[in-house]
Image (cartoon, rainbow, N blue to C red):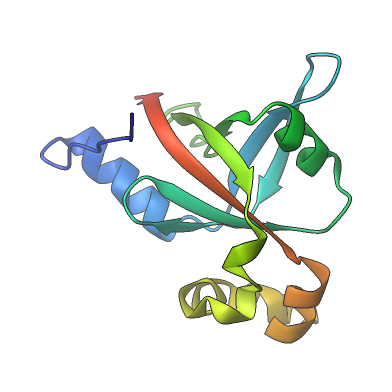
Length: 142
């Protein structure tokens, strides 16, 4: 079941704002021994319940997703542990999406970040060449 964000509530509006504006979300996959493996990632919120993430090839998170596609994602809390948002979803590697340079909204969101890393969109798309789509189905927080 797809995630429905109730934007008539303060919590729903906060989720929507964070999905739109936050630069980093923590993607937690599970390794072969059952241990959670959190990784900070750049993401683009798409189509209401979908996030697009790009990864470098041959990373543990890709192997984890291939074997166990259920994932959790979370934003950093504020300084006292409030403003918590945790999602659950299903991740899949989707090469047909193509490189980040073919997703103008992704490049617009992260072009400054790429420049801060002395990278261009083309260099980023070459290094982070594996697209991951996460379909969100649950959220909790306060």
